[in-house]
Length: 465
Image (cartoon, rainbow, N blue to C red; front, side, top):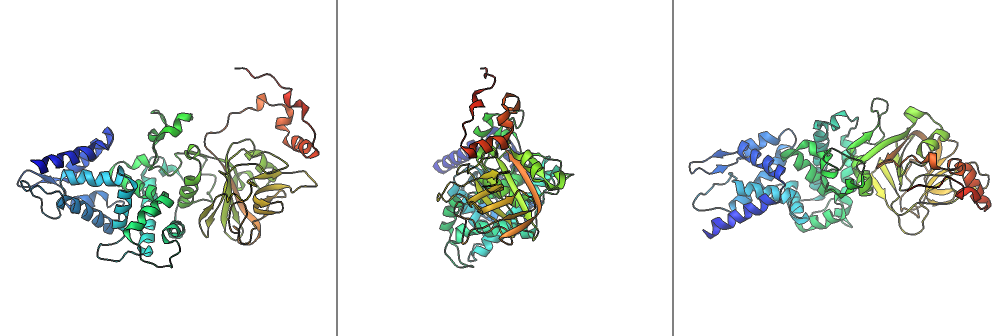
C-alpha cells in the first residue's frame, strides 16, 4: 500500500504541474496511444508513440526519449500490476512529461543530455551540436505547421543551423579543444549560460506532445483575446515562445535578410517587453537606397533593429534600445548590442568600457554625418555613412563598446541591402503635441552643437491630464 500510495502522490504532483488544458491534452494523448494488458493496466509502447511524433522528431530522438520514459517506469514498478520493459504506464508517462515541461532546469538539462547519444556512447560536443541542429530544424518545421508561421516568408538552411549550433556550443566547450568529451554535469551550467537552448528544446517537445500552435500563440503572453498592445503583455510566462508572434510586414514584397535561427537568437537578447512584435520600418527592397528615407523611417519609432548585408554576403547589424533622433553626441543604454548573422553568428553586448552606444547626425561640417554604434568618432563598431551605400566596422581586436570583432567582410564595406525593424509596441504618435523643434530634428541638433539654449522648448500647448 505504501508503494502504491507513493505512486499516486507522484502522479498527482506531476499531474498538478500542468494547467487544466495541458492535463486534458496529455491525458487524451496517453489514452490515444495506450493499450490495456491482461491485468487491465494501460500502457504505451514505442510504436504508437513513434507514429504520433515522427512527423517532427527523427527516430533516434524518439527512441532515446522513450528509453528514458521506460527507465522511469522500471524504477516505479508495482508488483501487483507489473509492466515489462518497453511498456510505460500513466505515472511514468506524466512524470516524463513533467521533467521536460514543468520541472527545473536541471531535469531538462538531464533529458537533453540523454537525447544527445545512446547511453553506451561517449558524448562529445559533436553530438551536442548535431542535436542542436536537429532541434532547430524540427522547430522550423513546427513553425510552418502553425497558423501564423505558415504565412511567414522565413526560412532556415543547414548552413544557418550550423552557425546557430556553433555559436551555442561555445559556452559548453569553454576552453576545451574541439572536439571534446562532455559530461552530464556540464549541461546544467551550459543551460544557465545559454538558456536559449533550453527554450529550443522545450518548444520542440511542446510541438511534439502538447500543441504546435502554442509556439506562436498569443494567449500565453497577452490577454485572452490575443496579443494585445498593453503592459499586461510582459506579465505572462512564455518560456517556449522564441519567435515574435507578430510580424507587421508584407512578406510578398521583401525577402528578409534574417533567417529563423538569426531571428531566434537576436529576439532572445531583446528586452522581454519587446520580443513579441517586429514591424518593418525600412527596406532597400521597398524604399530604395536613400539615407533621407532611411532616417525618416526610423526616427521616433522606439527601439529599432538595423540589419545590413554587405556586397560580400555578410549579414550583421545592431539593436538600438532607444528611439533614433539626430544628436551631436552618443546616446543609448546598456540594452543596446551589435550582432552578426552570417557567415558567423553572435551577439555582442556592452563591455562597460564606455557608453558610446548609438549616434546619429547629419548636415554638420565638424562632426561625422551618418549612423554609428559603438567605438568612437570615425572608428565605429558599426557605421553607415550619410551618402548611403558605404560604411565601416572597425575595432581591432574588438570594438571597445561592444567587444565585437569587425562584422563586415572588409573594414570598409559597401551595402547590398539594408533593413530596419521596430520592435515591441510602436510608440504613440505624438507629433501633434510637438513643437517645430521636435520635428525639425536637424535644426535642434544644430542648436545643441552651437551650445544655444532652446528657449522654445517650453512654448507648446499645455498637456492635459
